[in-house]
Image 1 (cartoon, one colour):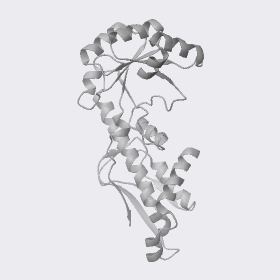
Image 2 (image 1 turned 180 degrees about the vertical axis):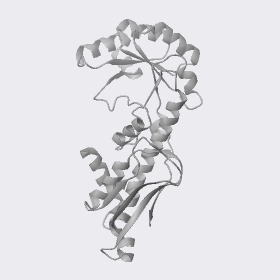
Image 3 (image 1 turned 30 degrees about the horizontal axis):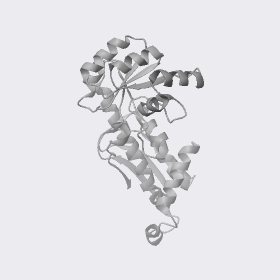
Image 4 (image 1 turned 90 degrees about the vertical axis):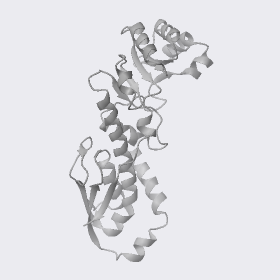
Length: 274
């Protein structure tokens, strides 16, 4: 919660600055209002407690009741939370709460579409580090609420040897050997490959996970057959809602989708005084 509070505080400072001049000019102090959060379209809910915390940061006496929970489908026209407190507080927190909530619901909803598209194949949809700077913890949480799984959070919690690491280290075998010697034994080592030759090298080097990057469907199938369960496989590149099912049917274990956190559409949500 410390990291989430930091995000919220920075957003409130950015929006309120030296003061909300419109609200101060038009609303009497002490005016109490009740507001509803209303879905303007169908979406998967994510971030309801983040929205709650925005208002609590402004006034701990605000009453906030959620009528739904993260991970649940909310329908157009549904009231999924209500808030009661001083009108000044509600108006100052409105935009920040909605901005974060709309983004998180958009990510969760897009993730749910990808998860549904690969249903029954055994492939798992995972995210990437292609997140909005400063909002990664929220965006990766939203992916989980949509039924996806998180890849590594940042550079510090997972080994993923990519093309540039391989070039700088002097090859796949050398890169894997060095990683194996230096990282904790509890961490799996994943390596990016571009073709079947590199897949063979990654297998020989003892990689735990092999990333199959930008391979066509035929090559993906051959790669999965070549690996034959000796490592986990992850497909990446060229993944969208039109292609993801075919990619999953090649037999890969994971499909990483950068679009989950960089190409989502924010959901339409309103806060209305009643």
